[in-house]
Length: 270
Image (cartoon, rainbow, N blue to C red; front, side, top):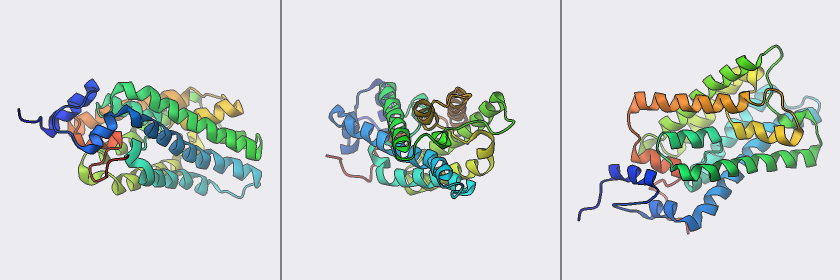
């Protein structure tokens, strides 16, 4: 019997079982004994993201304004870029429930993996927020994302929808072909986060990430319009999935590899 073609493999992924021509990296993804590595990777990466994104505001408050807005905007983008480089091939470096759910909607990631990924991301955010509170105290609202002065909850939600649609579109787009996985994805995603923050941070905080917002909110008790930072990114991610179908049609095997952290140029993780 001839092995199934690579185009058949993503469909098998959605059923949760690998079939056809298997490689070390796809076998690794379906070997549940390595699931802890993927979840640890998501928790660690989200920890560093929230540490920088929320920590910039905390240190700014602690240092009486020594971290300007430009630096607070650029830092999370650079951190995401670095995290994609150092652990993208372990878990896909989602770091964001909206990205994980969007990959599942796009059929690049099995739905049964989504709860674990989201839980790990939230755990990383909570740990980072707890560290900031232990190190600096309850200052700067622990870097919680809040609507800007005079900005309504509805406006905040709409801005987060648009920003997140752009972010997830970049994530899905740079995962659409083998030549885009890796360095180009890190640069594009990090660059987008910086660009979005440069104009939208004063309006909504440019969160685009429920985990980034919920950790500081839970630890710091800052709940103003918190739902906007959950609904907005999730709705924006769903829009981006629709855009991806319009622009590129069905998902590709390369996108499966990017979503799962199984880039074919990497050796088996043992």
